[in-house]
Image (cartoon, rainbow, N blue to C red; front, side, top):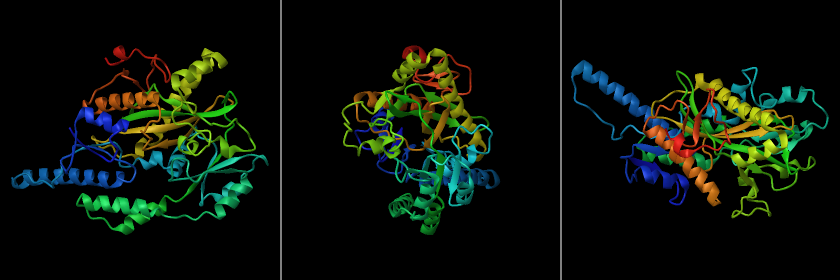
Length: 402
């Protein structure tokens, strides 16, 4: 296998890819691990290859012409063409709200629903969280009352990120593809929205807020969703004790935590593996309630994939590893906060590195060997079926590989 990636040499993804093949130095790649900026150019290239192959087949049938090529092999890529239906916050919210059980908190999309938000009756001290629809790593988040949120949004300047535009344009040029830069600018402008959601009072552990980062491998969306969840996710804890008056300090995103004076990258203080988390919950809530939370999380994730399945084009060489951020409310209800198309694969600690490398290795083996997994493989188990394995369960790895 010849792979193409911009990941650094010491990252888990580069190390895992190197076990499967060699890095391509030209255009002879047959596997692409694309970052956020590279998704659109490479998926457009894949569509062009598929269209050209079909055109060539038709020409051969009709005119008995020799095979033609555009200089690229067909290749695997770690994203679906229409992944934004799931990973862009405003589109995700709109797709979830089409269904009675949405698994998200009360949501409005600004600017188009700002009047409905203003007219919505809530408790005077109810807090809301506003998040840019297309940003990530916790950038641009604001928490406040309805009045404070509306005031904040009146001063928001919906800017287009010039670095993203130039990065996409340069990659199109490198691949030999033509693209109008105005099209890239228009795509970026469409995404400049805010999602406003009711702030959920979280379940606390030792007076600290936490959420769960879970990895989900999707092989296909049609004719039915084929998805697998990694048992070995982790909980992310806010470094400060929970204080309802200072909610900005309660964000659990690791990218935000690293700006905290209390953060130490060499320690696991802000993270806890999923197995340990659910052991704590069993001791606190009991086995039955904890198991129900595990089941509810897996159902929420599987439902969310089915909610967007009719909107995502199913290319046979596309797959995706999504990073799901899930919150458990103090009422033990499960909420999906967001879905990440490019979950961070860097690692600060040895345990973090082991989990990510194992997850990536098992996922790529399933994809590249086209394994038809009925229940489990490695650290993954299938969603949407009755299974004895749930997230956070310890699994005999030797048995799980068969």
